[in-house]
Image (cartoon, rainbow over all chains, first blue to last red):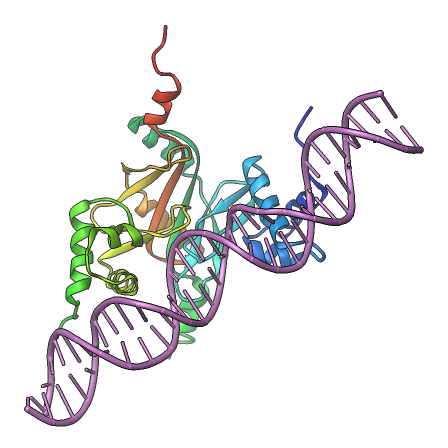
Length: 128
Length: 128
DNA sequence: AAAATAATGAAAATAATTCTCAAAATGATA
DNA sequence: TATCATTTTGAGAATTATTTTCATTATTTT
């Protein structure tokens, strides 16, 4: 049988997959013409349930979604708000820790907050 | 001079500190009588800025706050929604990874999602 | 005590997300 | 293909969490 994914949901998936970045529902909506708000939210929900997309809680007002590719952590700049990916995989370590507590991990997310490289450079433009 | 913390903000801090758990603004509101909604939000903001409290993004609709104590990660059950603390400190590792990317970490959070111990036990009540 | 400053609460305003429901699209059946 | 059933859609209403406004009250300073 397999799972059915509607045309619009496929478009949403395509956008997330192509842009290779973190997008809010609104970002997706802006990238697709002629598709309703509710449909985008429904598609994102559906894709998340299917495990094709991940809904991240990065501490922003709105949720952000990303196409599931490799494992990485996120860095959110407290100054400019940019989100950067950082290559590193702690999922094994997290899974182990959880196992010790008796919990079974499906997926995990690591988010670091601080000042990103660009903002640091702006702070100290050039030294004397 | 020092920093000024209002009476109400101190009450909010006390609740978070005493309950030793993750609370939404509404939870805090319910724990304190005769204090307005806006005041609680303002207190939580203020305490967060002062670094006494942390605003966590656990993927729930509302933000949750916790009194900053030791370093630990969070486990959010996808079934019952309970949040469990797990002792483990990956902050050094996260800081190093970020440094390699040029970013400066202020704090980091690790959240695991899956089925918690209690829900697993409910699934398999007792074996034959 | 008078003046200046900061904190408060009630209610309105915002913003993100979800819900409702009738219409359109799709798929299955005869 | 015509018919019936199921799913998906979008417009807008409804919800929910959070923020803002603003007049009042409390606190500190002078």
